Image 1: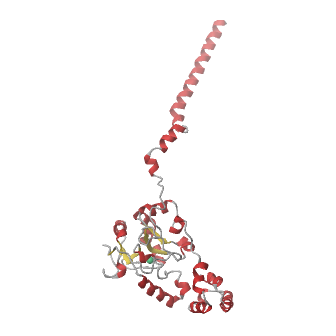
Image 2: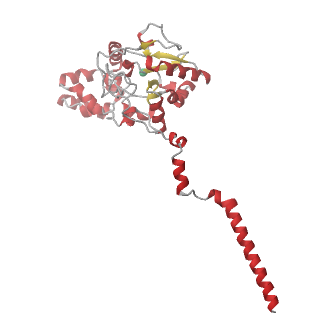
Image 3: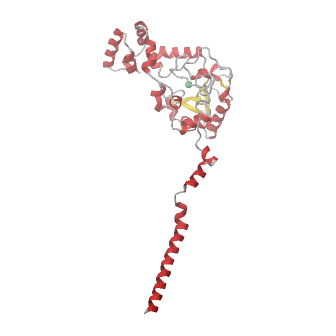
Length: 312
Ligand SMILES: [Zn+2]
């Protein structure tokens, strides 16, 4: 009996040992690799330069946002360029041009010459042919372009798609309008639906450009969608904007956003000026009847700011 118990106990010990051995082996072979890393391992990983380089931190003060020659200059409705500013480094890019080489608008800042060529080559490799529609534009040229649009559509409408003189990025030489060689949808929003427009939206940031006036950020820029207008900012910034899911320079640098009330209030310093400005505006086309009556009373009282806000 005693001997039988001894054998039974011995059997039990062997079974328990076998289970323990199996359990330990299972842990080391299967579970151990998936176990959470110890704090020591995490610190080693964070110190790995490869991991750190995947999360770059950009120095937002690296370049000026006010110097007209800076690749990061921000020009918008609130931030004009000096009237006399002309870039000193204008060149004609070696890409397909829409006009003769000595035309003013077939020039760009030398700062983005290489980047623009690379972008056009990149598009070509994907099967798309891009052409320079417009590059540098002087203050004087912008004045005649803008005034032409005001005559055609009235100032309020013109302000949604054309910059007032001194407020155009084209005056820096750092902005280009691109299009297809067959001019289909040239300077029209439908360019964004063409393969070339889609390619630019998806890839421009890789070459140092941003689509400056996107569909989703019209309230921030104050301009309608322009899928053809590219602004050079350099790859460091364009990739950072993309990585942060942002689209505009105003958002990235935390600058004042477009404010129609503020912008237009300057245009209505006197009732006579307001009358002149608004007489060119096509009321019946852009406003409802109720707003028109508001329009009349506001004009008489020469308090047009609120009205203008609705008109936009
Ligand atoms: Zn443009």
